[in-house]
Amino acid sequence: MTAEQGSPTLVLGPLLRHVDTTAASVWVETSAGCEVTVTAGERSWTGRTFAVHDHHYALVECEGLEPGTITPYTVTIGGRQVWPEDPDGLGLPPSVIPTLKPGKPLRLAFGSCRTSVEHDEEGNKTHGVDALRAYALAMARVTVPDGDLPAELPWPDMVLFLGDQVYADETTQAMRDFIESRRDIEQAPWAELKDWQEYAELYRLAWCDPVTRWLLSTLPSAMIFDDHDIRDDWNTSAQWRREMEQTDWWHERIVAGLGSYWVYQHLGNLTSQERAEDPVWQRIVQHEGDDELDLTEELDRFADRADQEPTSYRWSYARDVADTRLVVVDSRAARVLEDDQRSILDEAEMSWLDEQLRGDVDHLLIGTSLPFLLPEGLQNLEAFSEALAGGAWGRRGAKAGEFFRQGVDLEHWGAFQEGFRQVAGMVKEVAVGARGAAPRTVTFLSGDVHHSYVSQVVGPRDASKVVQAVCSPIRNPLKRRWRFATAALSYGVAGPLGLLAARSAKVPDPPFRWNRLRGPWFDNNLATLEVTDAGLDMWWATGNVHDGRHDRPVLTCVETVEIEAPRQA
Image (tube, rainbow, N blue to C red; front, side):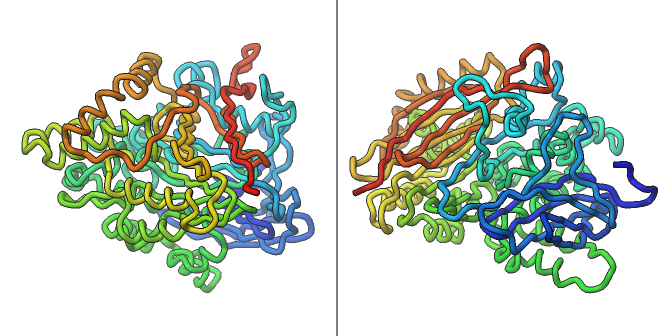
């Protein structure tokens, strides 16, 4: 559609965010302040934009929908319909709002780590085929799935993005060109992001591709950040944080990163009830008058406080779908990094998680960007690095430990032993039925490590199956020379080496043991988990180019895993 001169246009979106049985939320960014109307069937809902740093956003709450329905919708801004559109003539179907059907078992797509480059031969050569694009084309039936996948791909109920939706520190050429158009790239923070304007452009590049826009307009999404959404190794240690805060650019970066995360990602995670209790959203809905609310100063203050006082805001959230509970945990912003106390979750966050990890559901899913269970040897190395940096081998050892954990990215759950052991204890209690009836499965869903694998805890036969499932990356593969090194270190050398190192630093043995079921594999991929009568079916799929059609990759199955966990009689 051609925009009328001076009328607002759709910059980004629509993104279909939280959806339940009777309500949905639709997020957009527009070029100017305006009213945004979503129409589905015979019903319409309208929301007013709010402004942040001269950008304009709206989240329209659509309520009173029928359960278990799939309804096409349109978006109108300033009185003019701006969506749907199919500018590349790909034959994408209309965007729809699919409400949940009561009692229907959950089908969930998940993955992490996605960079944004062109979907052409050069982009696929440097970054691999975008698994999200291949998934979208298969959903839209523009391409036919390959291999073990059904010819008509069953649509998930939602997709869970487990971190690194955008890369603020490892920028693409398009992002660097934008940065250079406004400041000297030879000055700090160089080719990394500096402020809100650059974050806005980064999100635009990530979500502007027509196929990605269609998928995000149709498939409900939930998200959580990881380090690259802000910066590599974000909140690894107290020393890391001190080094960042001594720079003259970090404060603006973290305020822009957390503030833009609230607008672009977190706001859509919330239910309508949670939004009603959110202090920032309250300010938006309480605004009176026809003028657009400028939220810039308030959101900057909010983001600054969220960084300096992590207990002031919770980024984690939980959802119940049929007989499955999904708990999504912030493993980055809520860390305790004091020299004499370290935990991956602060006391308030740990208390909240303690309340969420309960039985009386068939399946408990725990989404955390960082794998809770790395290969055992690597987990031991991380515990050793924490003990070493904490002074287990004296001052010189502490310096070596800090260098080691920052240089080799040893900053997962295993490197925060206090928090790891607390959560492991909660999970053991859930699994044996000490927190309500034991679920059939307890499954950690994670990303981050740029390879995929599945592990399972060795536990009592009558306890819940406890599983770690990792899907990473969606589009940001390791270079081939690093794949062998990663596999050899994580699944070979790290085993005996990690155990020896951990014991030398008097690190207690882990609270339980686990074995690798499948993996690793290094493809760009997106995983899908489906609740079945037998337990859980999971499959990982990548995109392959056929006949030189680089922009139309075919979704191909990489691996399938079945977790047998029949219902108890």
